[in-house]
Image 1: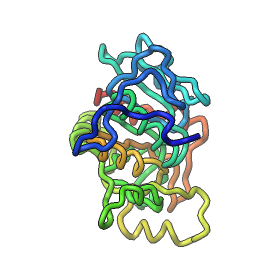
Image 2: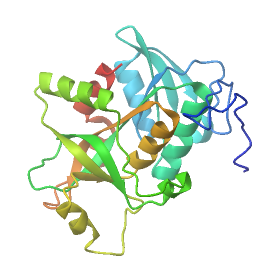
Image 3: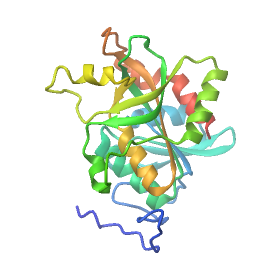
Length: 256
């Protein structure tokens, strides 16, 4: 499929070379007339998106079923919010976040998902709020920057999320995560090297999301629940990873 199959027709701006064009559909998102809210939660698993919508939102309507990447719009405490799965990895979340930003006008993108803890003081079910996202991906190369750029989250969203978590007495860790292209890596020492640099946890998407948001001048954040521990080898079950991480979801929804 050609990457130019959907084009934004608005004039370019200095801030964003790919300005937003609200449209009816893209090759990967077909809302069929259902609005997509300016704030969206982005779990990787489409079934987790369905769980969030059915558990927390009122007046839900499905806005996407293309490739079984489910998306829903509803209200949370009277305010519109959407939730959609993104699949796994930086290429997948980057595709969906790009279309949500540039073709549907989404302004606040909050990744919610699981992560593997990489520091000894962390426990299963702790919440990690990503201040930044280091990566071993080559995704950032396309921006042709004259140096090494550090993908950061929105401080506005991060500050609000930390305050919400503290008010709930939720144990949290704020800092740098690793967005890895590799789930099974050939270098057995790679994670140890990242740990020594203070990386809190590993996941697979945030660096791409943060880069797309920064390039477009919108806000993005990553909030994660520790599902396994790379030091202790403790881990949760697959069922728990799909539905049990309510603290993370509720913090994200309070940002609406």
